[in-house]
Length: 211
Length: 211
Image 1 (cartoon, rainbow over the protein chains, first blue to last red):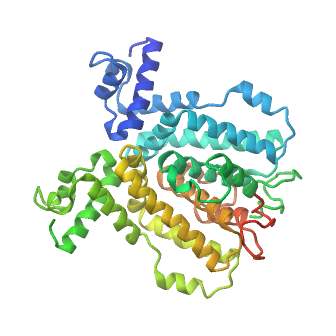
Image 2: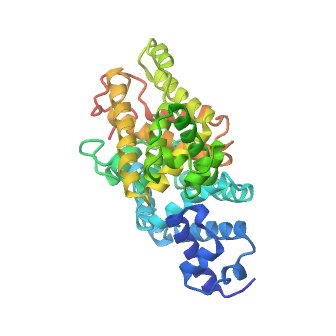
Image 3: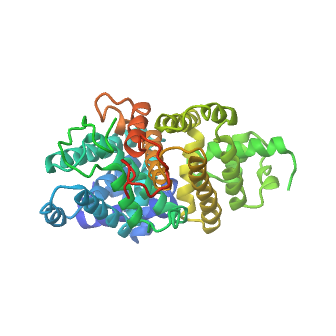
């Protein structure tokens, strides 16, 4: 395997662009070479096979779409209330809309995972790790609501990202006075996250977390 | 265009199977002919082009995945409370898990819609119609919560379907004591839908619908 880190990164970015534009089935070493404008055969020097390429796409997107630590640290200076949960979600939504290509590639990876057991295993571990980290972050920060709140919020925001990035016209003006996506994100957070912070152990009886 | 209704339905079902198994890029007239086990060239007698085929897939899946009117009528005999909302969502989840192929094809259609303006326009109108119908149904039935409740519930269930149908291991055992998908669906409904029914005009201040 070739060791040129910069070229490897360029090839993985090219793979993300191909995934988003052509769909998973369009992702071939040849398409990656063409997208990265490198000689045919280059990608095969950097990836042992297609599963290896998809795995490196996952690892790379994880970094590329990650929050800015300075932004997180700045937000954590605020009171640990529902308004702060909304700020964290706004940061996530902002990253997703700024890098729509990256997020569309993630959706393609999900569908490709239904067809490729190796990818399914590695990508499941990766997304599960993100969910567990979100729950831990929420707990450690003392944000309102428990693990169930985080799980429901995670699913609603996943649905929002899928809908808004693929068929934006479905949600546009669906709720009078609610701008999409920003206002709808606020509606999601205020519906799901309790507005107090009396524990957040996931078993409390407060509004929005009764299960 | 050929008129044999039965054969047309078989070709559209074949297209759904190809979409789910191969991804949108694998959907060619030739692949549909092969999947339906009909002579090469048959699909081109039934569909004017690929957009026409995708549009007919949408129309067909709409019927194929629709609720059973008898089941809906039976459920509507119950009190119009949060428990009934959960029953409607259980019926939806049951249809999605019984016809995983149909739902995976819908996700492929979304991603293909990002690449094909004609499909994007027709599919947006179709999904938007479903959302508006869900809001109207909820209002007319006097179920608790308003349009905002329905929108947030719609997005959370969309997220659940995407996660559970593509990477089921992400949610499995993520919440102790919450079975996936049934228990998690109940958690979603109890978190999002208020447990009273004092109006549901979308502007009320009750739990779970504060926005």
